[in-house]
Image (cartoon, rainbow, N blue to C red; front, side):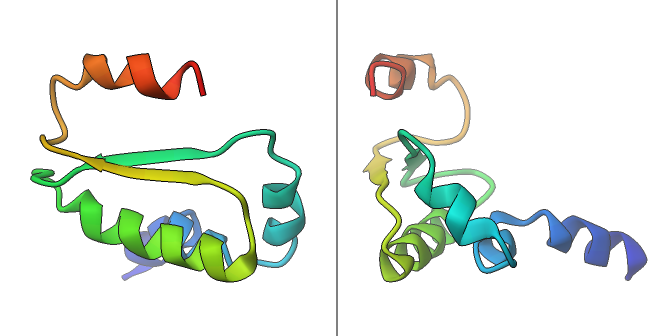
Length: 83
């Protein structure tokens, strides 16, 4: 329980609503979030929620889902790094 509470403090889904987070997020020059639709860790569900929270807060960001999983995704750098 203690370990999960510590992990949760750093979970982006919770951090996005932390005091001071909005100001910091709005100062970012770019924020790119992408995730595979068949992610083995099921990260796509959290990424969707994070993007929705950012949208509700008015934080500019790019969110994209791609066909694939969590591994062997070096080809995604061709999209994210130029951004």
